Image 1 (cartoon, rainbow, N blue to C red):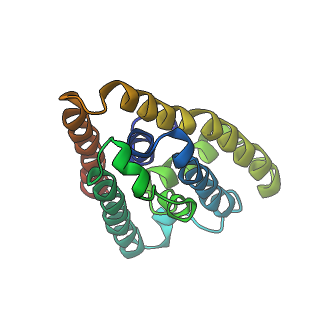
Image 2 (image 1 turned 90 degrees about the horizontal axis):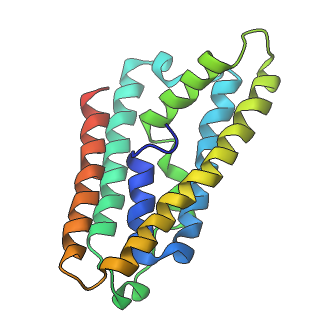
Length: 184
């Protein structure tokens, strides 16, 4: 699931596309670190977002959708040109908010914890497995999405395909927003 097209990966792809790989790295690292904000509370059994209350879960879904839409629009309104050098890419701090607001990320961690961590392990042992595992997988796959966006940008910048590709990426991002809200 970490490598599958979802809100975070579409945002990293779009950031790489519009701002380049190097300029997008702070955002990528923020997204990678942000998953730890979910892993720790779930591993310790402190927070399971689906068990807190249906109201909290509903609010989280809509806040997540709004935040991802904000980032998608921010990325959509720039072009794959030298002009993007004048604009700021999403920041490390903006990346830190992506996963905690993403219901897919909560579900992924809760599912991994329930499916792959034996119930006989302590919370600390579970954490020592989950946290580095997700970190390594994310540190491997998330930059690939960003790099792919940067690579595509080199190929289509200034061509007729530029606007089409951006529209497809943003449509996929908006589809993920729809799925967040509709499947809650």
